[in-house]
Figure (cartoon, rainbow over the protein chains, first blue to last red):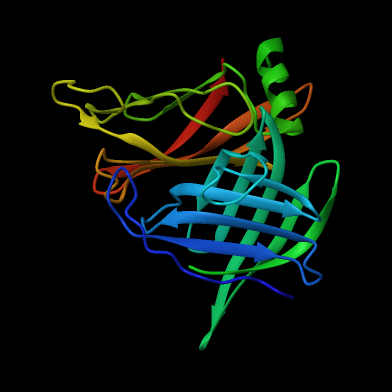
Length: 127
Length: 130
């Protein structure tokens, strides 16, 4: 697996808080999804990217090439991350991730479904 | 008995979270009333909200005397669950949590769960789309 992990500290437009990337991908590096989220008690996303094979989507050129990408719905609590991304009014990605910790281990794992293209087991890293 | 429009809404929920142009209305004890208009398109996205309970009001509207202003923080509808969180205009913490399960068949439909407002209370609620 070749998950890219890096954190970017930015000032979000409104309100001013630090944001960091969360990246999820499968073990074969077929798919990757990234969200730039603020450090709230809830999921506040300011940018997102999606890659399936050679197909790419992005919320802006600043974050990568591809078709337009928006947030359809998003939710996070202490144990789960639920995220649907949309493009041109259609859902293009459904991410369902559980977070768990035991001792010093903290893991984030789940599934990514891309309608019409497939579903993959993914693991996530960050923020 | 389930109304046709409600059943249609539940069917659309079963297919996905999009509830184009629908609104969620809930009620509970202590004259509890929730109005949650939802945006059209994929996903669950509140356009506004008004919550009344124990004689108090939480609303996304600005400048309502005596009310606490809130703004949508996050919302999602997956499987049989609907989650809504609201924060204050400065995005400081969660002020209102709505957690719902939905179950629907042609003969019977139900949407129910809880409303939690930290510091104010928590209540069981029943809801319907309209």
